[in-house]
Length: 340
Image (cartoon, rainbow, N blue to C red):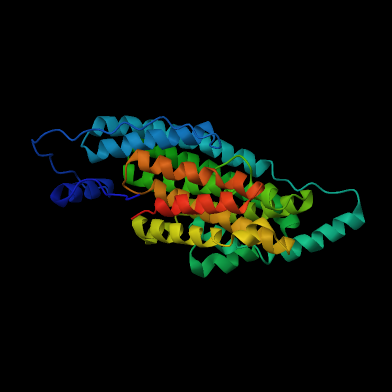
């Protein structure tokens, strides 16, 4: 699949300037630009709020690209309200990830040892990167959950306070009609949702890759700690490293990394080391989430994006009951849809 930036020459520069907050130049009195209507989003694994945000933001960006300012501003209001609904989901996820403590102390101690070992192997640096945490702060972020069971309540309070601040920022965007600011908030909130679920589908990576209640809880708490760290940075107006590269660059690298993580079908299907298998599956899901967001931010047709997302949405189930044939098929389909 080829992702093509719409428009060219002077007109493309005008669109980019408008999205960056500059005053738009008057459109030329030429033939009207055809308006692409998004097909209905109907992917089973997506929360309805995410489907609505995706559709509404397509209307917004398409209206901006075709100089329909009133339509763009009306869609902005819908996007803001949809993001507020997504923050409800994020807050619920953060509140509900309290680790369950076992009454069987020997079992608990053994599970804690296994969880501590697994935490050192899982690619949390890639989760931090997806959240826009700069490379020079990732170690600090990961160190923040060195003792996840003890830190979880403080992390939840921090994250929930930051979510309230994000709601205030969304309200300001709705009043000012600031599309540039909305772009950044939209990007972060969508990435936050994908990280808290780790995949677009309803099955979280923790439950999918571990299967043990204690391990699931520890992984979820660690991911929650990273989310809290990123939320605190975002509401403090600190830089979001996600935006330091062009969308096309992020999309190409994310796609390449995902294909690479899917290439070792033998290890994904028939693991000899449970921890290693868990790490491999977790990496696939995190890279899938990164590829999802990268595709979302490309200037390509809605139909192309939807085709790519539909394949990504099949990954959780394929990893839950893996077969070499299914994984190879997904790999080949994704390869054929390479963003460019």
